[in-house]
Image (cartoon, rainbow, N blue to C red; front, top):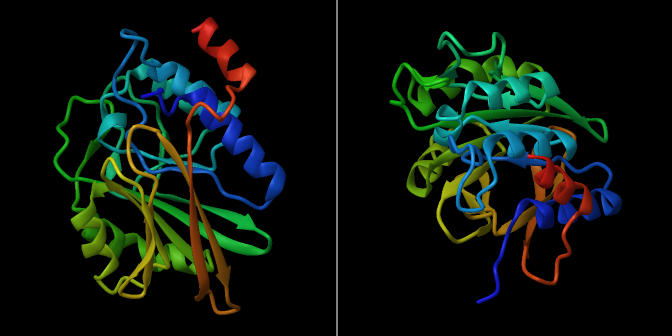
Length: 247
């Protein structure tokens, strides 16, 4: 089977999407950083951070993989001003960058204020660069009142098991969208309770495009998703290939 995925193909897909839809938000739900510095042809965390910054990701969730990332990779994230979000994480190891994690950020998309919030599994231990100190549901209940005041729509980036994503969606939090769910397979947009849930799957094999129509009160009027597999038909972005050669 031909290889699927890769940062260079992902860059091509994202750049093409931005040309078609200038108001798009580009996010990662977590787990792209792994603590990897090299080996077996796998991109290092430092390369991931540089590519994400070059592609102007709007937010990256700090998941378990990010908790194992090296201080150098996290400093690269901080220096590039790539937003790393987490409502239940903290970066308090001696090597951690002060102010690295944002509880949430707000982006303006065509006049609609979108809050991007990150959550991941609780229980990642002290001594890592990033650790977690609260359950995702407790963390969201604590920060959502403030986030709602600053936004029209709340999107949660969740590095959680799919069942935990569904439980959050069904918890009556008033969140419009949850993206994520640990699974090899992508998940087309579906309604769980009153929340739209979708996932691109794992291993960076796909780009999932979620299109929303938002009403004047912030409600989701319509939603649709489309999956783009990053197979051989997607060309490699030359700028990313150059970054890889340099790293």
